[in-house]
Length: 57
Image (tube, rainbow, N blue to C red; front, side, top):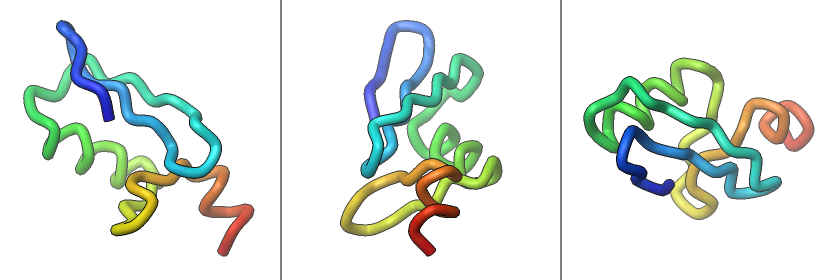
């Protein structure tokens, strides 16, 4: 995850897909929002996008 001046960019730990979040005010809020949208929070790989979650059950 990368913190930018106006939000966060979450990067998939498998494919590198990016998800921009300009509304959250903290890293925790950005992660919760991504998980609510189907991203998987994995201890080893970090956040994994919904496409990779479906392809790698």
